[in-house]
Length: 462
Image (cartoon, rainbow, N blue to C red; front, side, top):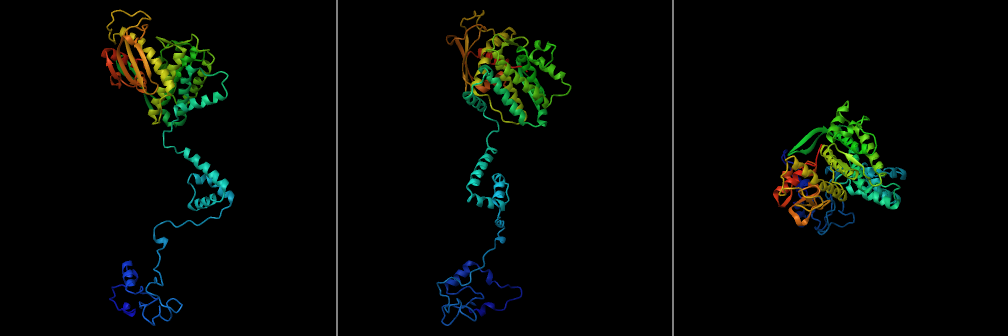
């Protein structure tokens, strides 16, 4: 069909369809020797002699027609970027060096506009000093977006202090036995620094084990810190420091629970975040004071109906600080890790050494079985023994004498073997895990095992 034939009359409802033909139609026509119809060639055969490429002149302007192997003289229209729905390319900005350098921080945070980003990145390919600065800023921004827990590694503080002390030893170092308390109070202080004003009033339930049942007391985050202030005051009084309960001296004769209740009653209003300052100052003063005690000497800390040597009291305070820090972290939905393995091992060792005394007290109260022995084993003599195996973090093995506090644990007299995870054992000793629910591997005398697990839970208190 000639070019004129392509423009035949149509019904008024029909539309001219040539510009909307598919690529397959165009290809099929070209394969038959035709170019696409249009104003340039009128649909003529280029191969016919005497025919030119368009009306009134040669198709290529050189006197030659288009050959069958040549592409169409006039290409199809290109699609505009405005029709794609994609954003238009940002126009290049011509900015001076000082302005581009000032934009590096915003660029590292991805806070620049597209045009500014393009200008900065083009400049980074030309300026070495700005490229180095941009790399440092990007690395710093990466530290602000760590995907893992926000809480610091418990060993980080210890490693930093050890590195510093290797370079310059302290004139008056913190005793090794006071290091767990120093570390746990520092970790709790970092947690308290991160929480907001409203979170100080978040509800917290203190839990412990009493007799053969669990007990609890409802308070707030600020109330927990007030509790730590009042009980840490027992160590402060033993060191000759001020008692947070006042100067009348009556607080020294109270148990930890009684001291806490007295402190709460003395507060005119429920404790708020203002309680952090006295707790922080008291803990720092205690650490400084024990550094002058020359190993603790014979100082003892009274706990109402019993007392602990200063060394053990500092471990006890470190343990309770960690336990209540976990209570607070759970209340405000904050990640919190256990203590470092070395410190956790010392806390477990203190609990294991206290088990025979607690077991004997429970036996006297009728809460534990009398055992196979009809008489107390003489002090220093071996007797029935339970092997306590602590696995995982802070692990180890302890031989627990069952018949008397003064008896000696002996592998030859072993009647039972219990295996527990280190953190699980600590939560049992804190009263957070009921003895019947403790995940323990057990072999041997079931009655002895039950007595020891219940004695471990009885180590807890408010």
